[in-house]
Structures are given as C-alpha cells and as structure tokens.
Amino acid sequence: MNVEKNVPVLRFEGFSDEWVEKPLNHEVELFSGLTYSPKDIRKEGVFVIRSSNVKNGQIVQADNVYVNPEVVNCSNVKKGDIIVVVRNGSRALIGKHAQVNSLMDNTVIGAFMTGVRASYPEFINALFDTDKFKAQVEKNLGATINQITNGAFNSMVFMFPEGQEKTAIGNTFQKLDNLINQHQQKHDKLSNIKKAMLEKMFPKQGETIPEIRFKGFSGEWDEMSFGSCFANVPNNTLSRVELNYQSGIAKNIHYGDVLIKFGETLDAESELIPFITNNDVSNKLKHTALRDGDIVIADAAEDNTVGKCLELFNVGEFLVFSGLHTIAVRPTLPFALKYLGYYLNSVSYHDQLLSLMQGTKVLSISKTAIQNTYVVFPKTEKEQAAIGNYFQKLDALINQHQQQITKLNNIKQACLSKMFV
Image (cartoon, helix red, strand yellow):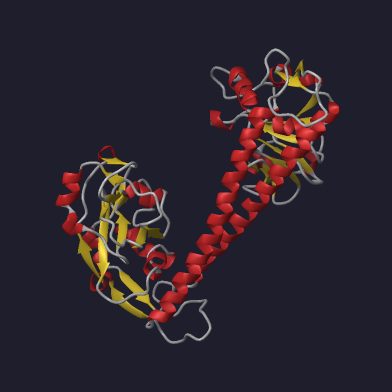
C-alpha cells in the first residue's frame, strides 16, 4: 500500500483516485438471523443457514436444519447476500463467511449469523477475505464470549474506492473464487468416487467376491492369514527431533506422516520423506532397509485410524527405514505393486482391526494381533494390477485438482494483499 496516497499496490488501469476511510455501515446493511427452539425443527420447512453450512466461501449442504415456517420472523436471504459467522464456540470460526450465489427460496440465517447486504457485494465479500478484516474481527471479539456484536460489526472501519473500481475488484475475486470452487467440486467428487470404490472393489468381510469388478475377471478371490502373507521387517524408534528435511544418507517414515501426510502408496523418489540426521545411526540400520512393495503400518493413533498404512515403491538405491510407532512387513507371496496399499486401507480389511485396538486416549495395535487378520486378493496378479492402477489414476486426478486449488489460493492471497488498502 502507498500510505501517503491511500492507494493499493496493484490497481486496474484507469483508476487513480485515493481510497476513502469509512465505517462499514456506510457501505452495507446488516440483518439478523432467526432464533428458534428445538421444538420448531422439522424434516421439511424453512432452511436455516448455520456455521456448518459455510465452508470454503460457499453455502453447502451439511447438517441441514429446517424449521416450522410459522416461527420465521426475519427476512429471506437474497442472491448476493454475504453470510458471516458472528458467534461460535470456536474463536477461529468467527468471521467465516460465504456469499449467496443463487436464489434460495425459504432460506433464513441462524441466530449466530449476520447477513450483509451491499450494492457491491462481490467487493465486500473479497474485503472479508483480507487480513484487514480478520484483524478487525480479532479486535472486536468479546473478552469472554466468542462473538462480534452487530454494533461492533457496523463500526468497523476500512478503506473503500469509488464504485467502478469496487466492481472491477469484486469481479476479479469472484472469478478466482469460481475457479477455486470448480476445482474443489471436482476434487470432492473424485474423492467420493474413490471412497465408494474402496468399499465396492474389495470383498466385504466373510465374502470372497467384490461387488464391482473389472470386465474379464471372475471366480473367487483367495483368502489367507496376514501372517502367511507377510514377514516382519524391523522398525526404529527415532523421534521427530532426530529427523530433518535437508540432508542425510537415509530417509525415515514416521507414523504421524503415515496417518496424516501420505496416501495409500508412497513414491520414495518424489515424496518428501524426512532424513535421519545422524549418518552413523543410518549406517547401523542398513540391515532394516525397506524395499519396493513393503508395507508400513501406523500402530498408534488418537482414533480408529490406527492401522492406516502405505505401500512403498520407487525405492531404488535409496535407504528408507520404518520409524517410530510403525509396523513394517514384507510380502512373502507375489503381489502386483500398489494392490496391497489400497486393499489394506479399505473398509474390507481395516474393519478387522477395530476389535483388536487397545487403549483409551491413544489407541494401538500389536504385531501379534495383526497376524490373526485375514487378507483377500485376486488369484491373478493381472487383476491385482488393474485394481492398483485404477486407484493410482484416481489419486493422480485428485492431486491435480488439489494442486490447482493450492495454486489459485496462493494467487488469491497475493492479490488480496496488494489490491486492498
């Protein structure tokens, strides 16, 4: 920002006037939401937008609540309205907002939301994405209650340009938001397809034929005990402080990365796996190095994601080890690469682990317990490979959309910092 002239760093051609400081209520009109009681809730009726319906700048269908039309005493939302969370148990959610992009009949906002109506709604919506708005929210939050009052909201002060520049800025961010939303919808759709296929392309417990199968394959799958299919590979107990992301002669797979960061398969060549800082330690662990096709299982977690695992590939000449709170196993039977990574993370297999988990605050599973589970697999490696390749392609598409979302969000954040005063 040019502080002396009150103009943004980045500006559309043709605009040169200084921006003017104004209270928010000079530019917008606020409207309150509906207060209702549990007895007013119906299976059908007037839709009430709550904080759960505001996600990634969009109004979404999530935990929808409908109320008796007779209790509604507030105005229906209009296209262009911006819905803001003004009270919530989580302080971080205050100020979260979304713009109503289509006509929504029989729709109001809840009591912990505020509606914002403006002549230039796209500009205001973009303004609410800036760090300047977040700072105003933090400044006006109550000391004991996570809430912004309408009075505090109205009195927030921002810099505003004249009308045509508001339109140009608002349209720019609306286009960016639309692109981000398109990629997000495709990402979510593919993720849902993957979730469904992970349930349908592997046999349910007690069965040996999947619900969905590639053309040309038939017959029952084989079933064997986990202990008959795998041999244990030693792991180590190196903590995060003994790892780094800069250099080392060996990489180490930490259970936290298995649970949160990595997918069902792990490319040792391209994925960011931390190094062991002490090379002497790495040299002593060489006999435990992993190979292509090895499985690394997280044996501890705070919930029933215990047992989430990955299949390693593209190890090549790299030294890769299985680290803290992991169980590493190596197939003793020939399996097509990438089949096991997806199967062992499917509901078909993972549900077997639920009754074997131990603990209260932290759940865990032992090597001994896993030995007694059962593994099912197609008799031919060709069918195994077809399944693995299918899910690998789905993951590639999902990752492409995620990369575009990240790229566009970075562009948006850069523009927000330079196009507002």
